[in-house]
Amino acid sequence: MKLILHIGAPKTGTTALQETFSRNRDALRQSGVLYPLAGCRIGSKTISRHVGFRFAFHPLSAPPNGVMGTFNLTSKDAREAYSQAFKNDFDKEIESATGIDQVVVSDEALFVFPHNRMISGLHDFLNERFDEVSVVCHLREPASYLSSSYSQHIKMGGCKGIAEYFGNYLEDGIYSKKLERWGETVGHKNMSVKIYSGDILSDFMQIIGKDFELALPKTAPNRGLSKSGLELLRNLNTAYKENKKTRPANIRKAFEKGATIDPWKIDPDIAKGINAHCSAEIEKISKAYELSSESLAQIQKWKRQDMPDLKQLIEAEGKIQNKFLAELSSIIQKLA
Image (tube, rainbow, N blue to C red; front, side):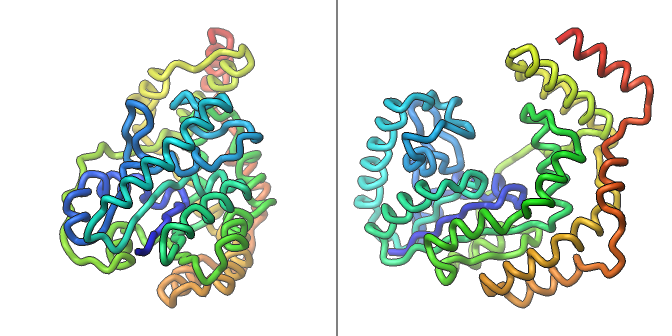
């Protein structure tokens, strides 16, 4: 039996894939593909992504991260109990899966939080149970990935400005370090790295070798916030953090309803500069993981000979020129 471990990266259609596979569990099972409930079901909650795989192998000595708090897994005792329960549930589900030749597990947080001991423990656990384990990761165009993840950073309560957020990524590399943690443990030959084309579902159906229609879930479009909306929400996040208060969930909902008239899009020159800046990193990845000719063709489009002053452009993008917005941000900080 083969296991396909889909680790993301984020912002490559992962939610759409997970919700589609979750909704079509029966149809997939009839075709020999298991999308396990173990790892999706935690206590009384069931979600579409396999967050439990990371939870079960996150070192007990390391502090909790990601959404562990949402599932009441912040204490060592709770995490240890969950880890054992998960392993038992997963083994029972695999043992009862007759007529199954492939198992698909998907969680983009496996890419976001690549703790070495988590990767090693999970890899050992899976290798003991499957004849083959293949790790699949999709990468998005660097500029598009950064702008989308920055918006998500603010929505989730982040406080970094554009210059700081982009700067950290560009200095450390966007993908290489996290990918290499996986590559060093599972082996490059056991990893399939692809460039996100915009249609992850079709791509994944090719990966599992299936050709039939899946019922698509009804999902609301994920509209981005405007530039002013992002800055206002960032200031609000900062105010809550400085006052050691938790931002109410309805604040994000309000911004997503009222600050999406003109969604922020990264300046084209900044996008070209980011892609050019990252071209060496992407080429290194393409050689290490032997990307397909289709992926290599997409990478070629990102290159640009004339490099703009990227730092200056990003700093300018992060500034709010509107005096009214600056004053309103200050008022919101005081109110929070």
